[in-house]
Image 1 (cartoon, rainbow, N blue to C red):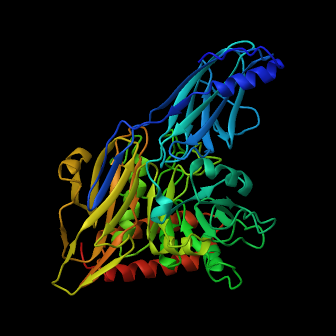
Image 2 (tube, rainbow, N blue to C red; image 1 turned 60 degrees about the vertical axis):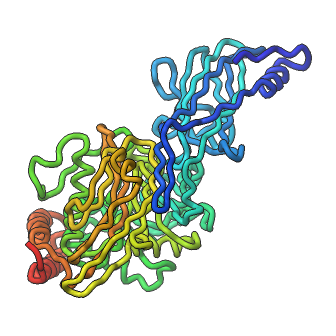
Image 3 (cartoon, one colour; image 1 turned 90 degrees about the horizontal axis):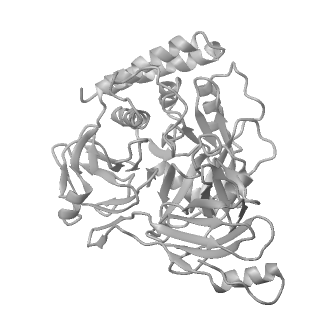
Length: 532
């Protein structure tokens, strides 16, 4: 786009007026398909909002470009996460923006001043919108203006699904500013110190960040205690489980303390589970990152040596550990957190959506604890089984059965490898997305004849990292409850390996009562086993 020079006014005024009068509307479009039916909606979004801008004019100094981002259907402005790349592919910062891991936070207009060169950029506004990409050329004494419209492909707020990120290492204020750009309603800014200068900000029905969550980041731990901060620094000698018990017994907490396992591979996991104080587990956490690179870690006990390898291994392993937890008969909801500020991922890369009728902090956390939710770092997967949301418990007498009518709404910008219904760790239904579409977007009626748990998940074809969406479990009581002997024995082995490490740690003395209690818990669980 060439901007004509005005004949009057100052050079800066001429440039601005010319840019505005010559602005070109660019619209994001979908190369995928959208179909709807009585029980399903499937949207495949291949992201192709593109723009090219060549700037000329009479402004002095470096070249300048201004770009506004709007929603296509409404023309409403959008805050966006924008990466600008110089000719060598290096991220550059636009003046006046928050800059995190190569990304600019554009809250209003992108104003970029730079050396003469060809630049490209990428634009994101969360998974409900198409992404954008484009480029511009800056010459000496150059200026230009453009508008990029992003297309909305889902409106989860109107469906009652409210998204949150439960692991931000950024301050509450920094996290709050990124929320609109990531199309998130809430986030948790964790801290590893005692209560002081609490940072809950913007709390309300629109967007809010909670800053009263303690992250126990000591070796062997990885707990997050939401709505609670210790009164003083936590000594190295204090058992993580003792900290958990203290928080859960806090009588003066303004909100119920929500205890979460952030690192499902941590040493103390089997002890926490035995305490019966855990409310949720981050199945998608900082081990899954946008670029596929994360901190190295491994569990104390490998559940299946040689199986979980390569770029997808960490994500598949944590998912498997969660399934083993469910196999022991425990009913704990999954959640997600990005590790924003340290992991290299954007806020909300891993996120949890909870189904609520009125979006407040209290109702949202209630829905998370109840498992009326799904977790994702890509696709948006909303399901109902027999008209019910995840977390529902279905019952039938021994010898009976439950028929399942599974309906779903799926929106994805990632190529999908398969859609699957998993029951007690085994595939009850699996289909590639094209096969599912040929079936009319309907999963055949399924039948459950025993107790257990069921999830619906979508796994993408991304090779550099494990990217998926997964519902919280549905549960089934058909006669005796399901407790797997194999799963219980796995946690017993984990516990003994943990006890061996704890014995040489500063927490040895304070942990011993909890280790002993955990041994009794898992032995009792073993005696309850109803399946191998």
